[in-house]
Structure formats: structure tokens, C-alpha cells
Length: 314
Ligand SMILES: Cc1cc2nc3c(=O)[nH]c(=O)nc-3n(C[C@H](O)[C@H](O)[C@H](O)COP(=O)(O)OP(=O)(O)OC[C@H]3O[C@@H](n4cnc5c(N)ncnc54)[C@H](O)[C@@H]3O)c2cc1C
Image (cartoon, rainbow, N blue to C red; front, side):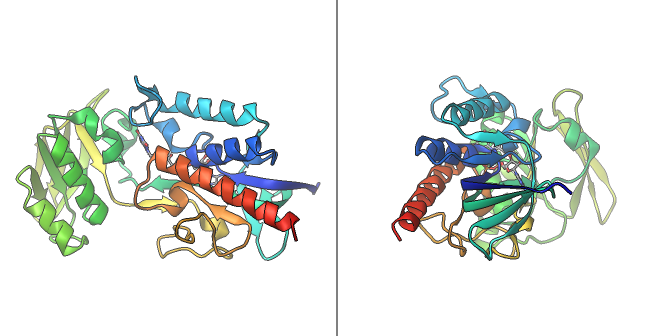
């Protein structure tokens, strides 16, 4: 096999808001970064429509268009954006060794991991078909589109409770679909949803089908004990059953929590490996927003720059 080996100062893995922001800062600092896009160029926002909460766009912007702007801004300062998936790493040596698409080897003084996280879905055809047309995995992002309307949310963990409470502040009614007769969430979060008059919890309930042609107008659920089915009239359907960080490829070298989120030293983007930094949703299970991802992307580039400067001074 033909092996190319390239040496870079900064290698950025991932092309969401975190990766492109890191690229803007690193390229403006003269570090000539290379960024690999992975299988979803532009990241999670490319699968959504209106983004209304990213500062600087007073009229909102379509997610794919916004990510095109990010890419152009990174390229303007010399970032080399390449299509490719990081398939292997060896962080035990310096420079760090990164393999792309099982064939290209890159030697990098610093690596910025910005591989994001993917929402877990129920796996229904109607859920895929209506994604972005009333089906969402992010209440903070999309709840506002359903203000004053009835919605449903699936999930029983802390995040589901948090999102149900968030939706209850905006929507007229929130059905919370819970598969078992109890929740995984902490007691304090359960109390919050149980005591909220706008939230109705449907225990032992699962989703049969999300209804609607071009937009959600209902959901058919069934009780998994009695098998009884019923339809609820809703216009938004939220899935809050967890996220999977895209960090598997780094697991032999980088410290992560049990869910696979990368652990960083608080107040920085430093990981346990010198010269490897993590930003965006890959290391954040709490905020998961484009603006916070971009913020930590900026931090990662500055951390990498300082690390490189310190290396040169030795
Ligand atoms: C439907 C939807 C709507 C949303 N709406 C909003 C909103 O309105 N406002 C808001 O602020 N947030 C919104 N979010 C959340 C927001 O999209 C994320 O918080 C943000 O995209 C995280 O940015 P990121 O750069 O960390 O990762 P991501 O955007 O997830 O990007 C990860 C990148 O890493 C790449 N990658 C993964 N693995 C590899 C690999 N092995 N090698 C190379 N590349 C790899 C992927 O291809 C991708 O480019 C929404 C999310 C979803 C799913």
C-alpha cells in the first residue's frame, strides 16, 4: 500500500463548529492547520434547518449554510480542509501519529479532537422521515419553534427531565413518554417533572409511530403492559434518550468517562496526553450547543498554540 507521511503542527479532527473555530484561530496564528471533516462535513448542524440562537445572525440561518460560512472563514486563513475519517491514532509517540481512511499517515505536533457526538434515536422510519420537520433531539435548540403548542418527549434520564422542564416553560403541554414504570433520573429531577402541571408522564409507554406527512401532527403510543394504543395530537416530538460521543478511535490513549466523553483538565481543553486537546460535544455532555462548541474550539487552538510555543522554547 502507498503510504504518505505528512508532518503538521496542528491537526484538527472534525468539521463542526468546534473544529472550524479551532481552524480559524490556528490558521490566523500561522499554524497552517489541516482539518479532516469526517463522514459528516459541517457536523450536526447540517441536519437541521433554522438556527436561531447563534449570535451574529439576527434573522437566523439554515444550519448547512452556517457551516459553509464556518468552512469558508477557516479556508480564508489557509486551513487545509480535507475529506477523510480518522481511523487510527498512536498518541504514545511524539509527534503523534494519526491515520486517515486507513491509508494516509499524518505526524502531528498537536491534535485537536472535535469529533462531536451523535444523538441516539428510537429507530422508527417516521422518526427519520420527519427529522427536522418536528422531530428533534435538542429541546434547547428547537423548543422555541413549538411555543404555545403541545409536544412529546421520550426519555427517562436527567437530560430528558431537564428538557421536559425546559419545554414546559415554552409549550402548552408536554407528554413525557417513559418506557418503564420508573425513571433513571435522579429523584430531584423526577420531582421537578412530576410536580410540573404542564407535564403529563405516560408510564410503561413506547412510541409506535410519529404521525404526519410533511410535519409532525401526532404520535401513536402504546402501553407495553396492556398493549393499548392511543394517539396524541402534538406538533413537536423530542427524543432525549442519550448521545454517543464519536470518540471510540481515541479510547486506547485518551481518558474518557463511562459514556465516552473525553475528560479535559477543567478550565482548559487539555487531555491526559500532552499536545492532544479536545473541544465541542466530544467533551461536553452538559451544554451541547454550537456556540459552546465554537467557544471551546477557540480555547483548543489557543491551548495548542501555547503548547507549540513552549515546545519551541525548550
Ligand atoms: C437536529 C439538531 C439541531 C440542532 N440545533 C441547534 C441549534 O439550533 N443551535 C445550537 O446551538 N445547537 C444546535 N444543535 C447542537 C449542535 O449541532 C452541536 O452542539 C454542535 O454541532 C457541536 O459541535 P461539534 O463541533 O462539537 O461537533 P459536531 O457538529 O457533532 O461535528 C463533529 C464533526 O466530527 C466529525 N468526525 C466524527 N468522527 C470523526 C473521525 N473519526 N474523523 C474525522 N472526523 C470525524 C464529523 O464528521 C463532524 O464533522 C443541534 C443539533 C442537532 C442534532
